[in-house]
Amino acid sequence: MSESSLADVRREIDRVPPEVVSQAARYQAAILADVAGRRGTIDGVAPLTPAMKMAGPAFTVEVRPGDNLMIHAAMAMARPGDVLVIDGKGDTSCALMGALMINGCKVLGLAGIVIHGAVRDTEELRELGFPVFATGTNPNGPTKFVPGRINWPVSVGGISVSPGDLVVGDADGVVVVEREKAASLLPLAAKKVADEEKRMGDILARRALRPGWLDASLRAAGVLKEGETL
Image (tube, rainbow, N blue to C red; front, top):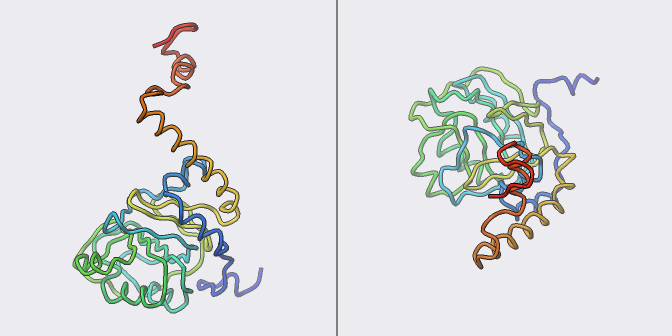
């Protein structure tokens, strides 16, 4: 393994292709999570407003709790369309980002921010509308002198995120799909949307208010005996 690949700051990463990002952005995070096997959702982060949506490749940042030095470094390195995914260890004792930095992210053309930590200046950020998914808020500011890592795998809200993975966020939260797997999920997502639209039509028309699979599943679970029905 080369010395550059072992460095704490990795400058070059393989990103999920732009055409995959563009197609994935059409789908709800919930749809992608379902077709990914009901996995990949980040626990404990939420958008500052329900209208915030984003999709893009992960640009990962690991920081020490309460210090944002490496976030500034990541902003200097990330490309337009990237999503900063920041492993802040879930610490909310101070904000790692605020209006100044997040306005900078918008000007740089980034797609959004996922931060397992706190932010501040939330009224300004809500007006700005730039997608920010955070654990919480705190008016206290961070330090800026503790080293961390950029573009290494991180753990955010119980999910492992690798550089270049697909990140999609909306009102429900954030889902992460492995870069190598993302393209294969798109036809599955399209089929699931079509199936759910048909199911919704049946519900609204009162044709199928009970799922067709319900009785069989209840029998398999031992709730109903063979031959019984609700």
